[in-house]
Image (cartoon, rainbow, N blue to C red; front, top):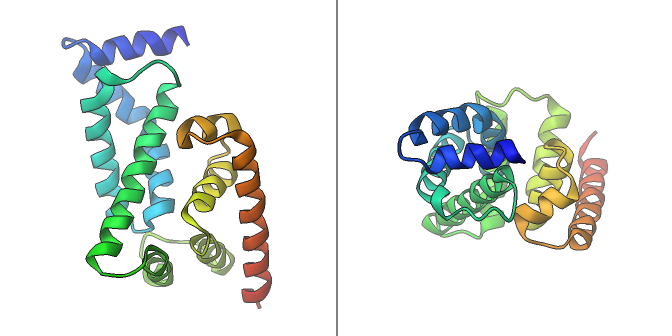
Length: 182
């Protein structure tokens, strides 16, 4: 934690901010990209959202309160940017957010950046059928292997509510896979 406080000080110092920020990007770029990608699906969209996320982090680092870990704060920004992006796209297309996400998932088959097999495709489709909060909890717990405490900081929700969301998500995904994997 002392290292993190020192790193944040470097991010806030005008003389060291750029170099520290490059280190931050190098360290977290891939993890944040895949977190965002699971939400927005498209590689190009994920790149755009990731760039916006880092811009917000760069501009907002002076306002970061040391109440959570830096990573949790950045993850929250990435999550909010991703959800805002999807909401905006759904609104532009004048469709419900779940319909928009369903259309994204059905395009996975032809996505050159998606190299998953059939079961991975079914899993992604099952995840996209979940309500947004359950998607987020499932992805963070299952794929990112975050602890409930970390997810709680990111989503600002109680650990008990997160456990219930994860349980419901897993059940729905199991049901979807049973009905669609033949």
